Length: 627
Image 1 (cartoon, rainbow, N blue to C red):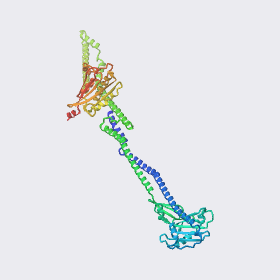
Image 2: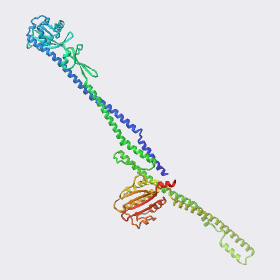
Image 3: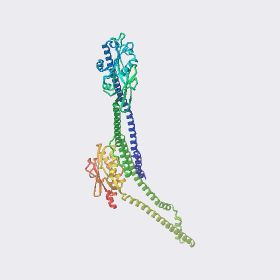
Image 4: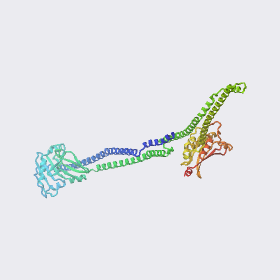
């Protein structure tokens, strides 16, 4: 029964290791965890990049727009400043002549003012006396060269509602923008008759130059248009997905916008930032996916595959029942430690299985001996009873009384009556003795039958002891590997051990063969230790020929002389004077012979090692005989 329990251990361990790695659960969990990590990482990378890249490019775009606004303001201010300089130069050149009371002039094609106005690139000219009178005013069309009274009147109206003294306060001249009809003009105002701006002027000279979107576009190298409808005093703008529209105000005399220079700036920087963001996010996600794929493969290679190998090995152990060790890959991490611990557990299970097998074998023999003794005791009970009854039986009559009766019968002086009584007494005594002998004979026959039963029981046990043990196919390589611990873990010497790999099947009793091989290994270890070198080697080789498998066990121990070889298999013989007991080579030889094999020992002499030749029938030959 103990071997049955050990047989269930691999199956239990296999189920436990099957719970450690379930391909449907562990792999799915790893994939799910890495997918969640990837998604969280992608979201985090997207938020991080968006919080870094987009504000930076937005700042660059704002700076670019601010630069365009500054350039526009500079261009508008420069344009108005040029008109202001022209007005200052013109008034300085006329030296107050314009305020001398010229009437409002109607320009004709041959007018003398046209060349001067064309030279100064102005369309309107106006002189205002100190008392507010208009002393001269004209407006000409630069295309046709004709006078434009309507525009002249509007220029006069602009001058009338403008505080010219405030415009030129502390200076000789000033400038501002004004709406003159549908046109936007840059107005230059200069003092007349006041060269240094410290005295009271005679009047003011005003020059007007129409500004167009094309002119501003040429100055800015940026397509710009004037929008009279926009009256915002500060630069403002709108944006869409591809462009950003900005309106820069043209400030009038009262500090309010009279129009705006509107231009559109392509949002190349923002688009570039958006593309860079998308590219960075895509690259980061691709890189993250590659990292996850590499991690998945590494986990599969470093964790899942070794666990699957352990599980497969346990499945093989469960199916075959052979506690073969897991092949170690010399890893120094937790997986390698798991494999080494697993192999240590298998070694312990092997040892326990072997011990239980030996104990079961010994227990079986002991139980068989107890059963035989029990049967022998039961068979001897009748004999003991018969002998006890025979020893304690009392004679039917006292011998002295019988002798006295016979003596009286022999005398002649005994009366007839007395003689008849004595004769009857003697006859009764003889009959009683005969009955007693008959009873004793029957009891002895019963005792003889009981003794025959005892002899039969003993004979049957002797025949069973000499019968050939049950043979079965055994892997002798596995048996050698299990018993190799005798050599590997010898406390007295360092012993190198080697044996062939792969299964080699023989026909034998597994328990008896394991004891024989273990005894041979133990003798080899003792021989190496007795040599005194502290180290040695044991080499096992297996060959098969003609349906017979020969196991050769060679050691480099102390060896033995040729004349000792013949006595090695004698009962109780040992080359170790200090040892007694054990299985002994005598039992080994008899056991191998009972398994239809042979065992012999050879040595080249003392100090030259020994070789054991163990020959057994191959498992295939046993199958052929069964067929």
